[in-house]
Amino acid sequence: MEKKIPFQNRFFAFILSLLFSITLLISFFLFPIELVLFNNQSYDPVLENEENLSRYTGIISEVLTSELFREIPSNLLPKILSNREGLKNVLEKYIPSQWPLSVFKDLTRHVLDYINFRIPNSSLKLEIGQLKTALILKSDAIALDYVSTLPRCSAVINAENAGSKEKLDVYQLSPCKPSENMLQSYTNPIAFYIEDLINRLPATVSISGVMPYDRIRTENYFYYFSLGRWALRLLPIIAIGLLILIALLLRPERIVMLNWVGRLLVFTSGFSLIGLVVLLIGFDQFVVLLVNRYLDNMIDGFGVLLLGLIQKVGYLTLVWVIISVITVLAFGFFLLLVNRLFKRNTINGNLSAREEGDLAKEELLPETINVESQAQKEIKPETLEEIEAREKKASKRKKTNNPNL
Image 1 (cartoon, rainbow, N blue to C red):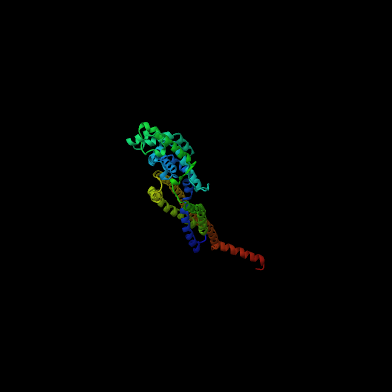
Image 2 (image 1 turned 90 degrees about the horizontal axis):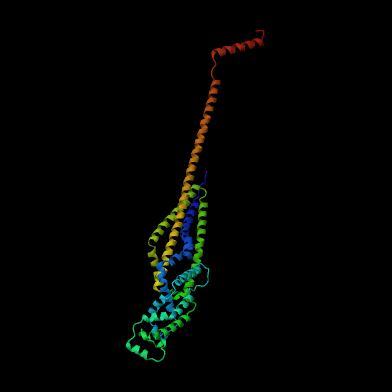
């Protein structure tokens, strides 16, 4: 017969059950985060999406334009290049078509390697060596297209430019589109100046122009992120340890132990599943409310791209979290089913023992009846004939022993 569970064991099991529910709820996110959110393969399908491919050239041209004029004071910039938006649109046309995708894949891989503690450097840079070469080779076409974006020059300006005997310098050019006969005189100095600007660019360009951040604050956040990541990886082990302690406290009654652990897993997973389903329904709106304030300082294309990445990869991560919860929920129901079968077998075993005892009594009952009937026969009175025969034998024995009688 099983022992009873002491009251203090039940009390400690209840406290540990509360701690287990909290750790289990957080542990649900561990494997989906590690396998989906921090996995580079999860981002490649999103980056290769047609909708995102159309944004890459605009983002890169915005970064490139800001880098071209970043170290040049506004008073030293040629007036002819004052239309920065027009130059950005022209540069976007001449960026190699396959290059932006590879750049963003490398950038994503760099960020994930840093988050996964594979590289120590937190600087985010774009490799632009191939881009520099392609743009320098097309500098004349870029200059011609850029001049086409400017308003037409007046007749006075065209006359002044036509009357100039010396070769025009880029700083002498008015911010307008000249007549056809003076177009070559405009585009040549602009092309040379753009080539010089591109050659001054380093082999790598920092992404901070697109995604500005405070370096010191970012390093502090990364320090706490490292601690939280380490603690998150330990939580499943802690949850399993708490579950083992609960089982040991309730071990005296196996039925109670299985019922307790099964219900604990079912209730924790069930409530978690309800909350996750509600979050999944409004996940896009939740992400916008959460990260929208951090996207204000970014350029439009990069902010939309980053928001789409977070929504799609985060949605996939949440789906895997739900799958993890359903797995634990199924295991809880399995324990309850095992407990029910074990309880039924215990009851059937007790009934079988009782039936065997009754059967043994029934088997012994005929033998007892036979013994009693035999005893009754032994004490049954003799008949008159038996009594007369016995007295005759007794008298013959007396005569034999005493011949004088």
